[in-house]
Length: 88
Image (cartoon, rainbow, N blue to C red; front, side, top):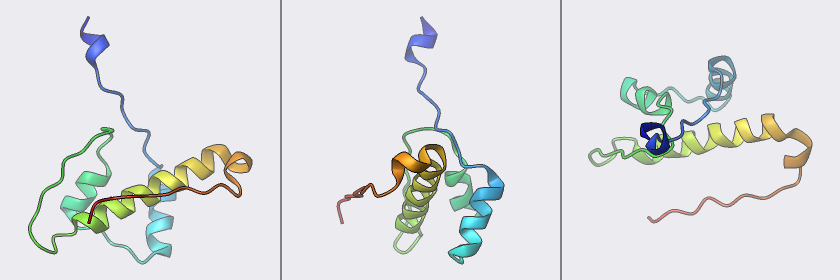
């Protein structure tokens, strides 16, 4: 019964691929941002003060998911369009 309510885990991008993307984007996460980005839960609640990096962390998480999707689906992902919509 307990397994029925277990939340699914997100498949994370392998560290070597993630680090290459971060180097390309000139992105260096803070220790707290890294903790969030390495968390494998599908839902995350992030709070912080003004200019704490919440949006940057979310954008990087989406970039990592997009890179993983392209790596997984290659040819099927070619030419496809995805929209990221969020409340400002």
